[in-house]
Each structure stands twice: as structure tokens, then as C-alpha cells.
Length: 529
Image 1 (spheres, helix red, strand yellow):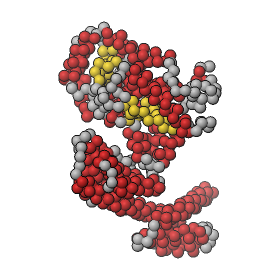
Image 2 (spheres, helix red, strand yellow; image 1 turned 90 degrees about the vertical axis):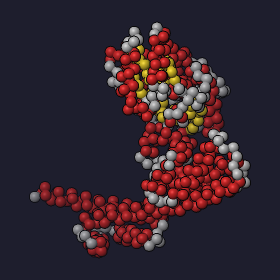
Image 3 (spheres, rainbow, N blue to C red; image 1 turned 135 degrees about the vertical axis):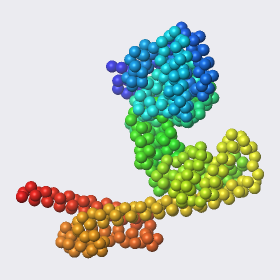
Image 4 (spheres, rainbow, N blue to C red; image 1 turned 30 degrees about the horizontal axis):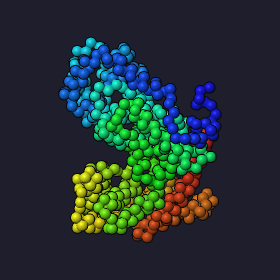
């Protein structure tokens, strides 16, 4: 029986509930990590001069190269299994190169030119060229051992992507050694995933911990203990990775808190799920990602109210705050309601970068034609000013400009309220039209009438009064018709539409069952004849 197989006791140092102190234990596996990192070095020592020349040639010819490394031997069989390389290449030295995604179409040409240079090296080599998107696809396919091997490859050149992967992979290994049974997902985010990571960039990491079976410790205390230990592993992971610049920026979430934030439509969580890439997942993060992509993770009306109200509150504070507070408040007061509109429209909230690239303008001005261009301009201007302030391009701002920004923000928020009503009304209209269509399509089959008035009369006379359907079904039908008429006159509301939708579901089910029974009776009659 291994250590992990033993029953958990409250005093066990490796259990969550019995952590007596914050310290880092030295695991024998750490030595394994170091050995895996050093294995490729033994291979390249023999051909170091040739590889240095090759690296210099590649960087001169292809200066956009993000990383060149030698893959460790233990990862090669995984590429063979994926049919990325032939079986005979398993014994070759594997050179792994990463180029930006925009160079994807040029990879065959790049590879052809580099292979000519590789022929000058005496050692048998095999070249693989990937983009960051290829790496993330490996993660999305849950091939975590493969991405781990790539992250521990020996770098010949690296602009930061391999370095970031390496420190995150080692930190993940340390966390799993301590809390494997509790770790739900270990996810990368930020600049590393966006593709603009440098050696000075932080590596954003999100760790989701399952707290559902922890009963003898307050959840706040549990979270703080976990966070303390996981944060202490940052220093050890950095040392093992041999990294100085990259600092892990780790966010620890309890599963219950995380899910609550998702249900409340927190834009941070939506962005995290949309953009995050798992390097460890126990079948939880990828389903969330799939649900978001399908539009199944939707905010509640209460959540939309919460985001909308944030703007009103912050505008009042912005009038009295200092420069940095003013800029922050104005920024969030337009960005958050704008994100809320995307979520209300069934889309994930855009980042500030996407706003600057015209996401709001494209969706609501150009595509939906629901809002005037000036409001997109206001949003883009405020987000742009905030980013300039954040990067210290703006160090002061005149009072007149602040007054203008506050006025524009108030105007923007009022327009967002109107836009929300527009989106709600359109959604209600679609619902009303759809339930009417569904109901009368079925009633045509039941009554065999075509005219709507005749359908209603026939349904009441030949089906309700003869006991085939109840008076409740007839009442539902009249309510659905009434809601549609009221909606056209502008007298309906969301509650009436929702009640009509619920009633329609009952009537549709009953009509469908009736038609099925009718079809079965006809089939039995034919078979009897």
C-alpha cells in the first residue's frame, strides 16, 4: 500500500484538515524532476558547438522564434504514439521549436530550410515546429504528460514561453504531491496563453481545490491554510526551474466558491474559463469551458442587476476621488455594464483588450444595430485612457477632462439601461413567437384545421368538451394568445412571458403525447388488418 492509499486521518500532515503548520516538505520526487530536466543536457553536450551555431543561424534567419529546445527522451514515445514522428526517429535527438501563431502557414518552409542546416550536425536529429496554440491543444486533449515533457525540455533559446511552462509544471507537481486528491484543476492564464509572454512576465496560475468533503474545518481557515502552503511552493518551484525572472502569480479557489462565482456571472471567472488552459484537470474545467462555449453558462437576472448597479455607485464616488481612483472607477463603471450586456446577449464578456479592438462596436453597433456609435466611442476612449494611465503614459488629467468623462459615463450608463431593455424585449419577443408557432403547429395536426380561429374552435368543441383535453389546456391556449396580443401592444412583461412559456411546455407535452397515441393506434389498426 502506498502512502496515498492509506486512510486519511485528521492528524496526517498530508491531509487538508490536519495541517499543523506551514512548511515545505522535501519530496524524493523533486530529485526526479531535476534528473528529468538534466537528461537532455547529457545528450547535447556532445554536439554543443554545432547546436550553438544552429541556434545562431535560426535566430538570424527567423528572429521571431519564441523557443528552441531539446526534448527529454521520456517524452519522445508520446509523439510516436500521436504519429507526430515515425518510430525510427525515437532514437534521434529531438529539436523542438516554437514560433508565433501568425507564422503557422510558414512552418513547412521554415522546417525545410532548417533541415538543410541540421544535415551539418553529425548527430541524428528530428525537428518539430509548433505554435503556442498547438501546445494548448495538447492540454485541451488532456495529454498532460506530453505538455509536462515539453515544459522540461532543455532550452537553447527562449523568450519566456518555455520558462513560464517549466516553473508552472514544477509548481503543479509539488502541489499535486501534497494535495492530489483535492486538486480539481491547475490552469494557466494571462500573457503566457495570449502569446505575449516575456522573461519578465508573471505566470498566471489558477488552482481549484475540491472542498466538498471537508467538514471539520471552517472554509475560510481551510482556504488560508491551502493558500499559504501552495504559495510557499512558488519559491521551491522557481529554484528547481532555475528561473529568476518569472514569478508565479497563483490564485487559489475553493470549488464551492468558484462555482458560486460562475453562477453569479463574475466576469473574472467567465474570462478565466474562456481563456484558461489546463495542465491538470480531473474532468471539471473542460466541461465548464464547453458549457461556456455553447452558451450554457448564463447570468441570472440578479447578477445582471448587480453589475448594472456597480456603475451607478462608482460614478458618484468618481466625482470626489483623486486621479487614480477616478480613472479606476470610471473605467470599471463602463467596462462592467458593457460586459454585462454581452452576457445578457448570450456571449462571454470581452476583455479590455478586446474592447479596444472594437468588440462592443462590432456586436452592438454593426451586427445587432441596437446602439449608436457614440457609445462605443465613449467606452473605447475610457478603456484607452485607463490603459495609458496604467502604463504611466498619462500622469495627470485636467479637471475639465474628468468632468467630461464623468458626464460621458453617466450618459453611457443610462444608455446601457435602455440597451438592457432592448435585449430583454427582443428575447421576450422571440419566446412569444416561438411558443405560438410550436403550439399551433401541433394543434394543426391534432384538429386538422388550418385557420387559427377554426383551430381554436375545433380544439374546444371536439377535444376539450369531449374530454380528450382538460379545461386547463384550453385556458393555457387562451393565455398564450392573450400574451402575444398584449406583447404587440406593449402591455406585456417578462413575468407574463415566462408564465406563458411554462404553460406552453405543459400544453406541448400533452399535444405531443396525444399525437403519439394517435399514431400508435393507426399502426395497430393497420397491423390488425
